[in-house]
Figure (tube, rainbow, N blue to C red):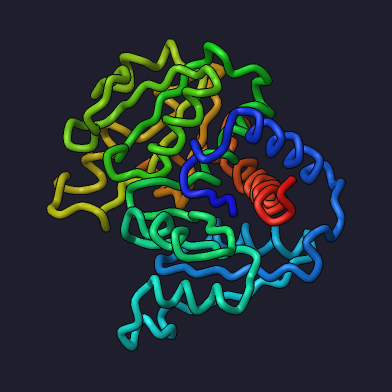
Length: 291
């Protein structure tokens, strides 16, 4: 059984097929190919976009989706996550979609299930379907991505979205530049800077990230306002440059991106959300139908 834990679980050819299917789905060309299939969502962290997107994707393809409320599951009675997954798997679902605050949980569970495990985000490790929808959004906008440059800005060290996008977008020919304060930068061979102004004239895309204070062991900035003074994406910074603007959400307005740019046509955030449904439909088709 194939699982999706990281973006590199799929080959370039497999990803190309997913993108092609997503394009068909976004154009309204789909039927109930997952009728009588059962998908379980198991979210141990809060989610708006990802959980809703997977549920809509499954229902559009005809699948039955069952949401297990983690707060009311037997893990609260002392049952291990592995035992929870094995018990759910014994009911013969076709896929289990997992989000957890700890890195590595979906991978561990995948060793104990016949159902496909789909990682909907694990700690600061990976968020593969987010990276796939970002790739789809960028290919829809630019076509060929080879040689394009993207600046990923913000709390990169704690970001599963950054990890997955660095791997995936690099494979599709993009140059990734990391922009963050020193405490938010991981050890990397990629180009890095602490100053947005240094790279603004060379990038084609800016991906802003949320400051993930829930993953910080200690306070890293005096306030989010202080952080925003250096790293908020503003109209003054962008000017009239032809730069596409992405964000995985949720957006901290006027901390990550200013209000004016969120309403600008160069901002692709709502397109990312729309594309997320199509991409997740394509992922479910691949893993459940094996096609």
